[in-house]
Image (cartoon, rainbow, N blue to C red; front, side):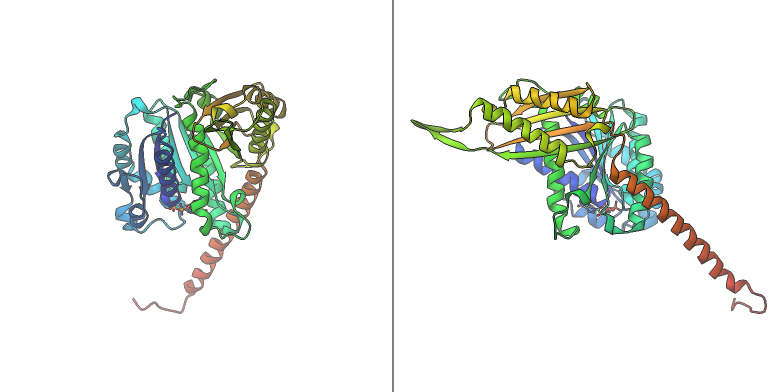
Length: 382
Ligand code: GDP
């Protein structure tokens, strides 16, 4: 599946860079064109993979290239004001090559948080292809304003995107790792997951037993504004030199391959989700198993698909394989569409309501304290 990639804000740009790097290193063909949008000139200059011609600085009059801070209302406003420039840059992407648009942004900041919903709405207004958002949720310890921004942005983006794939920064933090220190690793992780999923339908040689094409990914994500989560797990494979030398073979029998496939899919769906959720809370699922052809047990993939059907309680579970010759790993990507509930979302909403109340109380206090100068008997200087 090929996407028209639109990155908004700092994190969005870095994730787009990571996906383009993945595409190049893996020799994949999954991005039809990429555009990066930002209010911060320095962030745009720092990108490595997005074509410099496709980087759009917005809000120049308002913020002079210095970014929107964590003000997502400002982010939304400048994206609305400069929507023509954004549209012109995206227009260059050949839509005949595009199966879907993917708008990538962190939801907790300013530019991406405010701009992503505006851009999704505009893309949906113009194009027939589905418009998906990839939203990064802030870590819990980033504070109330990030939480409030993320909740308001998410509430808006689900309304304007066909589906929103969420990535929870907290769920992917390694113990002892600082949030900022882990961004590079986390972005590569996002890129690998998306890369495996999107590449599946593009596989040519070796030929898959069961191709996962773009329409299966689109049907799993849905087009009714749902939330999605993407699981991933991989397992090393042992290669042994054959009796007469030659190319090393995967040292496994059929039973081992079957078990390895089902175990890897379970790990992806139960422990490796971008947005942790219960499997019974999803409406649709898609599994892609990738690795050397001899390790892609057909029976294992079918068993894993059936297991997902039982675990989710939905018959809408699709599955396929993505053979790769030169890898020593078996990996599984599990896409869950129509996520009806997730503990992190309930928590985010409650924390955001609380943060919104505090913001309102502070504004009221500020009004009161400004009022102390209203007292009569004191004249201003001019
Ligand atoms: P914007 O430029 O105003 O849209 O703001 P950012 O993109 O910096 O958004 C801030 C949020 O994104 C915070 O929750 C950060 O933790 C998170 N963030 C910033 N950079 C990255 C990154 O490179 N990767 C990931 N996954 N999250 C990031």
